[in-house]
Amino acid sequence: MNKKIVTFGELMLRLAPEGYYRFVQAESFGATYGGGEANVAVSLANYGMDVKFVTKLPSHEIGQAAINSLRKYGVDTSDIVRGGDRVGIYFLEKGASQRPSKVIYDRAGSSIATASRGDFDWKKIFEGVDWFHFTGITPALGDEIAEICMEACKAAKEAGVTISCDLNYRNKLWSKEKAGQVMAKLCEYVDVCIANEEDAADVFGIKAKDTDVTSGTVNHEGYKDVAKQLADRFHFSKVAITLRESISANDNNWSAMLYDGSDYYFSKKYKMHIVDRVGGGDSFGGGLICAALSGYGAQEMIEFAVAASCLKHSIEGDYNMVSMDEVLKLAGGDGSGRVQR
Image (cartoon, rainbow, N blue to C red; front, side):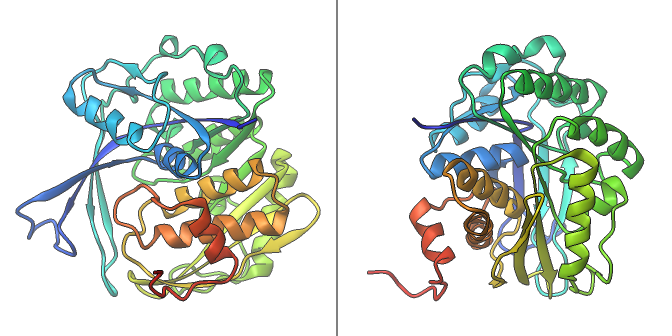
């Protein structure tokens, strides 16, 4: 029987100048859609999984276009609430070489940020569901939405649903102190914690020794300690941490670690030349959830998740448009990029 997944968060309109143009140079912007939990949903749908995305969007045409962007890939949109005034927007300027990418948010007052607890019937939403995923971006949108996340977690737990959370700290949305307070309460319900190399330090003050993300130095031993501290504090069954070594905006080394409460599993490391890095962490989360629900062992799980997110860095837009077979091929060792014919 196919496992069912629900993800919950904000779906935004992404406006980006063509290629590597800067904001101040741009005379036109390409329009696509994306958002942490929506990106995870599309990844899972592309692997053939039964996934539903829950949010609130306006009933006008831009809201409909956002929904259509999910439907195109087979994501179930039947529990998306319609209402409110606007779709959140983010502007993306793609970095190159030593110039970093930049994101400017225009999302205040969006439909999901102004949603109320009465908008979502979580008991109904979680009927027959196996897995629930959200990120730290969603509760950062406001106190009411943080309460909605709490209601969702409680309902998921009552329904026996496995809960995963990507800590995903965004300093443009809230302070480290507020993030720590809110996420600590939500993480009491979480089974699988996903983080990048900085999130645990930003949200919970748990730092990896001998690591400097700005110089691209990542110490594996330090992250073992971070994962163990997270698991011990919140009783997570699994902690997965992506380990990005930034050489430049275009070139990164990419790997990850999984801790299952007893052992540590490190993936192989990929040297990536980046086309678009937005959604890289989300594609890792999607890969991890798919592998977990497919019954993979711990090492297979982390290899699949890292391979999935490695491929995402080669794809324009937020959504990871890769198949299960493509991920398995890369995870199995074929990273040559040779033409397939």
